[in-house]
Structures are given as C-alpha cells and as structure tokens.
Length: 391
Image (cartoon, rainbow, N blue to C red):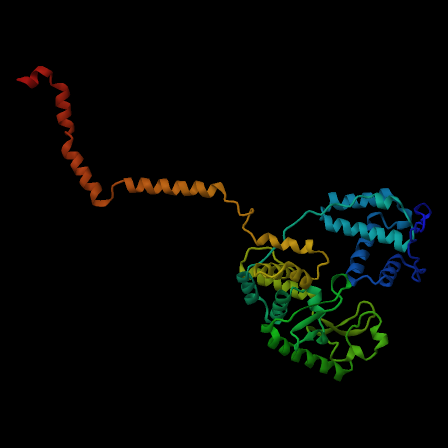
C-alpha cells in the first residue's frame, strides 16, 4: 500500500506551444492565429475589429509598446464615452487578451487583473403565435419560408443559412445542424407543414446549381480541409445550399467567385420591414423566433430537457430563462389597484341605482313641489305677525 505522504502530485500542464507566425503585418498575424486555432469567422471579424480600434485609439502605436494603462484607458473609453453593453465590453477585452497572449506571445500578469463587467440578466423578447402570423403575413415571399423554418425548429440565424441539401432528412423527419454554436452538431425536427415548401425550395436551388454546373462556376464553400480532401464535393448537389443567394460573390478568404448562401443582412432587413408593417409594437429580431419557439414548446407541456437538446444549450440553466412566461406576470400576484378599481365601480353602480331615473324623477319632483309651499307663502308667513294669523 502506498503511503499518502509520498503521493506524487501531477505538475501543472504548460500552455500549448504555438508555431511561429508567417505573416508580417499585425492584423494578418491575428487572422493567421485565429484560423490556426479554428475560431469561427464571426469571431475573427470581431477580434480584428477591436484590435484595429485599439490601435487607432492610441494613435497607430504598436500594441507591444502599450501596457496596462493604455488597455484600461481604451476599455474605460468604451464604457464611459461609447456606452457599450457589458457583453460588447467583454468581447473587446477578450480580443485584446488574445492579441497579447496568442499573437504577441506576452504573458502579462496584469491582464488577468483587469475586471470583466458583469452582464445583467435580461428576459428574452417572445412573440405570441398571433404576432408571428402577422409578421409572416407581411414578410417578403422570398424570406417567408426561411422565417417559418427558424420558428418551427429553433435554429439560430447562421445555422439556418448554412443548411445544405444533405442536412434535410425527409424520411426520418429530421434536420441535422452541423457545427452549431461551439462547433457542436445536433438534430431537430423537420416540421410536417414545411415538407412540401422545402421540396419546392430544393427545386429552385437545383436550378441554380445546374446553372452553375453549366457555366463552370466554382463549387460552394467547404469547411476545414474538405475542399482539398474531396476536390469535387463542393460542386456536388449534396453540399449545395438549401437557401442559396441568387447572385455570385467573392469568397473573402480565398478570393474565389462562388455562390454563397442567402445573406443574413437581407433577411434581417426584410424582417424589420415586416415587423414595422405589422404594427406589433415589440422590438423583435430574427433571433426572437428562436425565443418564441422555446417558450411555446414549454407552454405546450414539453419537458425542459427536450427543449434544451433542441436548442443545443450546454447547461439547462440557459433554457430555464424561458420559463418566465409560463406563469402570470409578477408571480401571479394580484395587484391592489385591480381591487381598488373594482370597489370604485361598485360604488358608482350603487350611486346610480339610488338616483331616480326618467319619469320617476319627474313624478317625484312634481310630488315634492305639491307638498312644499311656494316662495310667496313663505314670505308672507315671515312678514305676518303671530297675532294676525289668529284673527
């Protein structure tokens, strides 16, 4: 039996050693390191933006020559002058931490001491089924099916845009979401009411695919190294987009002219126009369809673990935020102003019932006038002395 006093402790693992950078310019080095670590294109875009803003804020000085005071001054400017949200503040700080640690290779202890702002808990905006019907009614026909798919499956905007033909399984009634948030795959339901519209959409997409094949255009974008491993896969029908863009565009990384999926900005603008025309009066976005999907499933009695799997949440606490609409507002507490208004209405009704109405009011007035003496009789009674009334 081994003595506990001689038990060896495992040494702390050293940080992974990164290969040397091949690029010379700072922003190119940043992009190279982000792509080496397989960060998403959205993360690359955000980190490049914040590092560029940081350099311009300090007069185009190199970040290697800037220290803790300059980083804190930049973050303070974002919070006090730009009034950015806490999540945006943390994103900017994460970009600078990545720049100093992963790109410049500087292990600075003061980076860990910089406080991160705490995000406030916010309840998601949820549309009622009637609201969603109104928005879909005013939405452009080219985007209506895509909006129905987002609400019917709970997909994120980018997850719906990146759907490919092979991800639709009509036989099993399922949609396979590839590389969702966090690089995770999951399976969601394929709504039965959207089967036929999706098949018509695939017919439209196939016409565009055949036109690209005839014109000899390059295939669609392939993730990771699949384009090199399977050179013809990008031109195959299985990898084509479910919602392709009508026009070709230039790939920002490779510079190849190819057909991209539907642009997110176009759908966001169309959704905003439909929201304004419907006069709902709620600040909704395309992501609100995902919130509404989760809330309506919980209202229908589905288990929260099932909703968690459909949404792709790693923690059930994230899904618990949607339970706020399952109960009445304020925890089903009766407001005292409702009782006050009820009492006021009862008093008004009682006063109304006590007052005479219509003919009764006129008859009572005539009866009162017959009983009471007129003004001249009262005046004579006041002027006549008591002895005159006796004679």
